[in-house]
Amino acid sequence: MESARQGNLTHWRTRLAARASWFGGPGAKGLAEALAAVRQRIKKYRGSGPVVVAEIKPAAYLAGVLAAVEKKLPVVLANPRWGRGERAQAAAQIKPGLWLGDNKARWPAVKLGKAFDGDVWAEAILIPTGGTGGRVRWAVHTWGTLVAAARAQVKFFEAEGCVHVSTLPSWHVGGLMPAVRALETGGTLWLENWKSLEAGQPPKIPPGNVIISLVPTQLHRLLMRKAMVAWLSGTRAILLGGAAPTAELLRRSRKMRLPVALAYGMTETAAVVAAQRPEDFLAGEPPVATPLPHAKIWAGDQAGKRLRSGEKGRLWIQASSLFSGYYPAKRAKGPFGTEDCGVVDKRGRVRPLGRMDRVIITGGEKVHPAEVEREIRATGLVKDVRVIGLPDAEWGERVVAIFTGNKRVEKKLRAALAGRLASHAQPKEWLWVKKLPRGKEMGGG
Image (cartoon, rainbow, N blue to C red; front, top):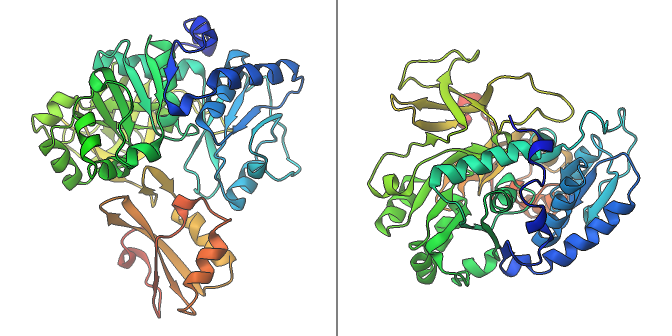
């Protein structure tokens, strides 16, 4: 596997120094200036703790991450929209050495049992995964693992020199990787304003050489805008990942001749690790994904033993882009057993079939029901609660809370949770019942 030291800025130092040679778009306004400012702050920094980035603006966020990587400092990607509960979880694990971000998103000051070890985690890039999942946690990458994923994807799609359009949050692996792909493969990063796309205003660039990353919820909304459909139909590929798309979304996209590239991946694999080429999607092939050149994927039992082709099991991955563990624990070397189940056919193509745990994926975001349930109980407004995910045409799944006690507390519950949980984790629907069923009666868990 290529190390961070081998890949770190050897290919993009001159590009990073240039003011406008590798990036563009409304979201990139001020990136060069932000990068210069952060470099000055890091130059003066003499601490041993990690650089924590929690900026709201994409340009400022990306500048913070790249400046830290450039100086080979450990960097922690934080979600500036985390609620109080999530910020407290983060603070209990890591004390920021240098804070780059909105002060409103600052973590509370707490005494940690163990300090951040700058030698053990030198050059680590900590990317949040799971969000509201019992506790906030980070998958540990290096620039080398991100580069491995970026180069494999560009090779798979024959996309050297492409324009990589990013509309996803910078603290997501899917929001960071377009920048890595642009810097490492001679492409261009285009930071687009999602609200403009949602309003039906296409990016001000020709679509012919564009690869755009979207989650199913985003594509669902863009299909309602004729101008966006026309622009998307001319792109090189629409990387569609983050959650399972509905059959109806795929049917409509194929009917509109959109070059969808179904993508399978996760934070732990540095985003895309398998994909379906647009031409196969448009030809009516089933929703399966071929592993990228740097990866091997198989369905196995709990120990990783391979199952026969077509047999359902846990999906296992071996790739040069695999993370090294969840901070602060190192992962044993070798293949990674995901929390996804699926099948692999005789041609090695992967078909994910859903989660093996209770995780809800809504709009491309992971929500762990247990954490949401804890926050709801903490309000003292319900007797008991069960959180589930139900199918939703727009969101993939929507978060639903089923509760007992006073049935007229929904308004108070929404207000109480506003500052406790990130917006995507807050229930979109509240259902009151006299008695709370358990187990399979609730649809899983």
